[in-house]
Image (cartoon, rainbow, N blue to C red; front, side):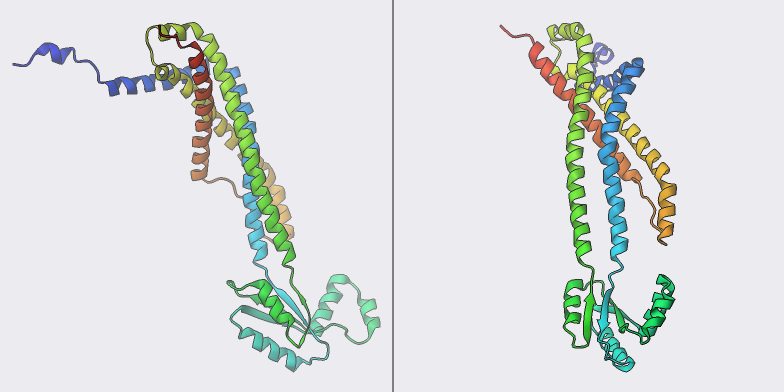
Length: 316
């Protein structure tokens, strides 16, 4: 026969107690944060501003990479031919170049077309009319294939006997890539510094909360409570600060994006570009919130660990 006393008075499992205390710590820490709305808001806003700066720079850098990628799609190489070449020789050379594996397209611009463009763009009708003969050479606009090496193709074009001048603006792309790499490193350094600042802000706020509950913590230590039991509510408090700061930082970035969207669209339209500012998607926003929560948790863990090591009663 089973013993009814054992069934009625069964003690909860250790896992159940552990889960219950975690749930209680989550709700209790949120309640403590909400009972001090102004202090909580001040802490969250300081953290949010520290997080928004590297986040905004990272988004701006990603958009700049997008823009640089669309600009670099225009990879034309301008091949100016010698002036003694006639139209037939120019067309034959263009056909020869179209047969190369590293060339996607060749456009022939005759001296007459070049002169007409110059008249329209520069408004130099009188000066050009005074020249008499057309001084412009035939121009071949060569578009490299997607997988080709632009610099190698430019060198091969320069070696052609019909070539007079090859114009290939590869230097600016290398400089732009260098600036983008520098920007990435700058964002990483700022993120590390300001992330450390956010950890310190949370740590200082949690330290003040610990000081206000010093006597309560001392009683728990005398009763034999473990460090994990005492530390848990403060860890969740730090995590709440981090999550709140991450949400506010996302809001600030969204507001900045709205403020910049209209003038940026007008600027892109003036260059006949469809470039539009891109923000964070749902996945990266969620990853940011997780990261800021971990930062808050870490700040609280450092402070509570230091406090508990100092106040833990010594055994005799």
